[in-house]
Length: 239
Image (cartoon, rainbow, N blue to C red; front, side):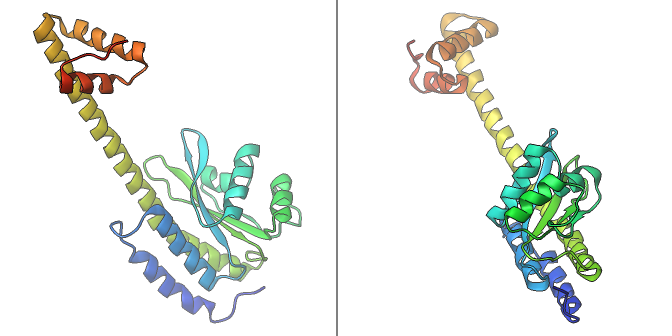
């Protein structure tokens, strides 16, 4: 299948839609759905999209628009080879123009063909704060076989990686902030419980902490929950 001559005219409006995405109104999944919607609108083959992120040396799919993409992502993670890993770790686009033809990843290509995927393009996310990743497009038809088609996909992917990457970083920052807030709350209640124990039983700070830790281990209960119960009731849970 080839790209219609007027397909390029659809690209700029798609870019404009991506540029107008707001963090306040979207999640990573909804941004990806928008990217997929636009890809389906302007590209042949009805591609399905996913986003691979490599964190702490381990790849994972942080968002996907369909099971086909998730299955083929995870196949690459299990075997340690494929275009999504290549793009994410090298910063260079990687493609399988025809999964039924020769490929640098024959095992992956065979699995993709057997799953009904005709072609694949993975485009690297720009490195930000040591985040490595790739935007992956899986097409059931030969969507990346022609030079003009691949150029169009590359332009779309290159423009899409900005909002996708930024949304991932934004959500990661929010999650880290929530974890930090929870950690601070836990520390506050533990310090409060220690203070009560120190005052009531004339213990040192270390002795008070050891009391809480011992009850936590004996009851197989989180330390902050033991501390919270003690602050609320004035009583330590019994082992």
